Image (cartoon, rainbow, N blue to C red; front, side):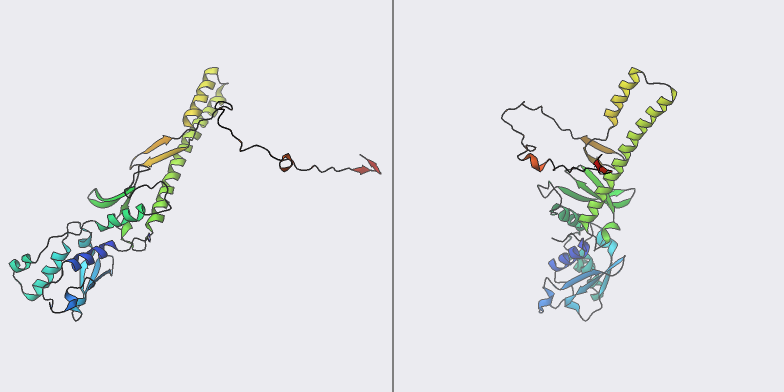
Length: 284
């Protein structure tokens, strides 16, 4: 499956229009009026889409504001029915009888979730619910929240970010994840350097006491950059330190570590080169 976003709004609108055909004014004797392939919708600008109806090839193509398609409650089939009924002079009661009420939903969130959950290059994906994308609102502005359930990592995308049909969702997510890691690494490094700076300032005054030395050792253990997994929220990082355990040799006799066993010592010790220097014909 391609990781390009495409135009999920147009594809969902095509599906809804094809599902609820025929429409007012359609010739019921023609196969095109019932064909599921008679509609083609595509974006012509940042603000509008065009609707091409195969059953109305002689008529001018219809435009629709893209903002309507982004509204999860927008009834695509009802809007198209009403528009055609007005041309034919139908009454409101006749028009409402042809309404189905099925809304657009959120095809963009579904497409992003589907692409990321099927990405094979992302490790530890065990189910189709590893990633979840949903439409949210911050300060009266519609946004998309993408949640990585394994890393407990969230990022946000604007409607403009996910309006690009050529957006490679998998690469875009990987870049955002790498950027968040770099920011976290910089933050931890600054804390480490800040701790060392205070210790050097103390040396300018006088020698460190045994208590100061003990506190310095504790500080290094606390502020050393660990091997961690992380989660980013809008205002904080959550850190989970990963530790290793070293086992003394001979603790478990049944376990043998032979990764460094030398089978031929010649492979590890190069042959020596002897250089004899003569001065005035005699070895130095």
